[in-house]
Figure 1: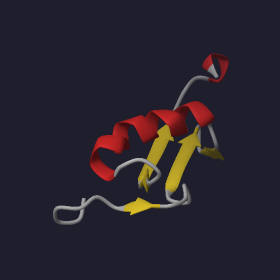
Figure 2: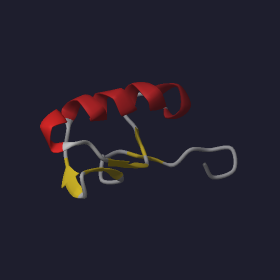
Figure 3: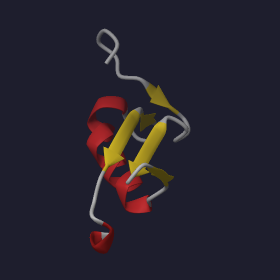
Figure 4: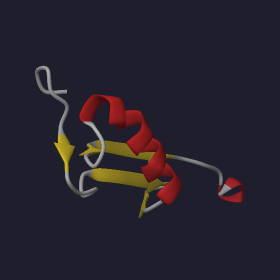
Length: 60
């Protein structure tokens, strides 16, 4: 958060997800992030995040 504004972009270029140290794209995670950010940044904008997830291989 920068001052009173949240960093928002028109694209998802600053939304990064790692799963077991591999960069992945996941539509469900993207939609969940959009829902979480919509109240703060509005519809059509995408917030900045980096998720670093670790799961056992048999749970993926």
